[in-house]
Length: 393
Image (tube, rainbow, N blue to C red; front, side, top):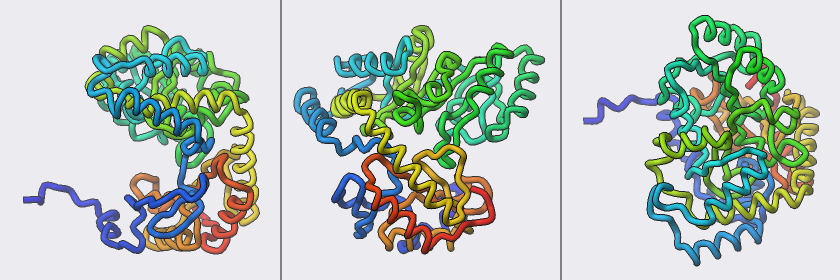
């Protein structure tokens, strides 16, 4: 019997529509760092979060190949038993880069966030932004803390919840993203930091989309706002700006020690493969040594924002590399997604309920690997196929 499996009506409606189903497509080739062949179509890859273009960097790829040849393809077990020198070297590199006392590697960015559940006790109230990653939502649900959500970037709402926590005798912990994954907007870190100080709260920031991107040195939202010291714990992924795979948690020695021993998502998962660790280590060092990569990304992002704004699309205040454009109800929105692909621009499609409301959202990203002509081509194709919507994403 399969009756116990709940239907997902929106997805069920489109999953058999091969012409407009946007997921699990086969990437056949990468003709250039900024392009892919997807579903048989050569297209500019505007669905990638390889922000610094390091996933195809020759040095990064060479480091991965050498590590696989030396250590094999995996470490065959949990970090408790399968830690190699490369893992320690990468953790030390990240700790130095992020100016944090300690770092713990994880197999994925999702796992890094999930491991935080070990820090959420009954005496805490986790106060989280409405738009945090699903991995953070899962982490809080696995922990023992009371969980409240405040409206996206709504400081007044967050403060009301802080007062509630204090009245109940609980220690508040603020949970947010640095640069939000879909809309591309930034959290109001200075205001959140002030709240945390005033109410004696913890502050955890998921930097998946801002590490390597924001700040003069690429250290993320904290450096961008000159507020790194206000953040207690940061989490991140190695599969975006750092062109590899894996995740990490950075914080105090005590926090990381607790996660290493009580974070079940970490303890009961395999170690990061040697090739991934070597690729990430080389990518972090490359990003630190080559600020021109961040400059190229910034130029591409500003060019994209200017062009889309001229078309009438509403842009966030920060000209980041990711832009979310509402594309109407699911079926016409997916037809627009397909039209963009057929015209040579591959974008990411987000269906409700993964986005609020009833509109499909298309996410367009640019990277340091995109040329000005490719960014202009993205703008041109969007202008032909995706008129501005009156409803915000």
